[in-house]
Image (cartoon, rainbow, N blue to C red):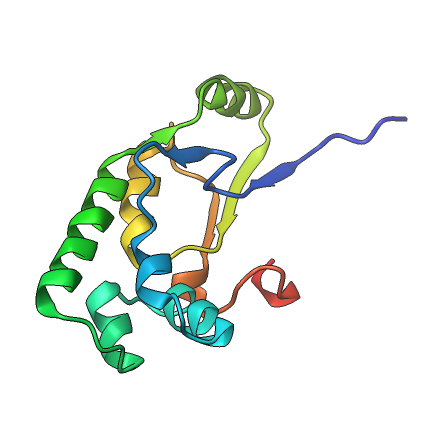
Length: 140
């Protein structure tokens, strides 16, 4: 007897959606910072670039910070559903499979992600909302 799949959970970026205009502003801001800060501050709190720079006392000029914010805006504007994922989503819905999304992401990417999805997921777990990152078991 075959068991029916009742639910599936997707990662967001690189699976469901992609950033077409990759500029990596958070990575640029955090270069030279300990890895711990990169994950804990940028991915597990609802912070933008300016707040991360402030909280980590990163010395960066206002002009450079504004440029990084422009890069972030460009990235967010370029978030697109990956080819074929709309069909996969529709087939899963037609088969009555629950759809979840679990992703490590900085808060500014949450809205563009949701706007790019072909529907509302049944479960949504974002590291910036729950304070945990994959692969921590508790996030799942």
